Image (tube, rainbow, N blue to C red):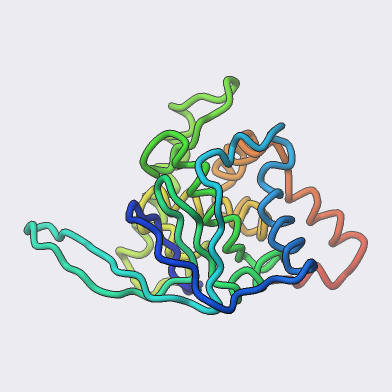
Length: 228
């Protein structure tokens, strides 16, 4: 499965809002519904205390990137992105990615970027959001690291491998958490088939079971049986 638009975590200051991005009420509700889904059973909105603004771009956007290689050389380039989550700043979303979210198609840009914000509640995004008191950090770390390593091993053997989840999850643990959160809500059947222990940890964290919702839809309407 190929990556569909790059999503990144950034500590830089946010760019200015582009002109001409206006939302009518139905579009606002679409965005709000996606943003509220991860919080459905978490109790309150304090989970989103790390930001106060969502910036919408009319299309994918260029953003300056930096990477220091193993030899210590720093590389800079402009990369095209559909979303970014800024450390102590806003979330930036390309509107076409928002429109493509909300179904059962293994893609949800809104949830992906909001997962980064949940992750950042513990500081830098590292794939470990604040866990509930009945969860064990050691178990979370072991489950996530094992699945992350498995995905990377597949791509090391064959960079063009048809992986069960988006290979962008192999970028780093923060992206692994964000991508698997996407799948948890938008393709729970694919996630539980590939990494059932990851699904179980996310079920404990988000306090909900999207797979049960999907299975109910599939039982009621055959069209959902071939949603991917």
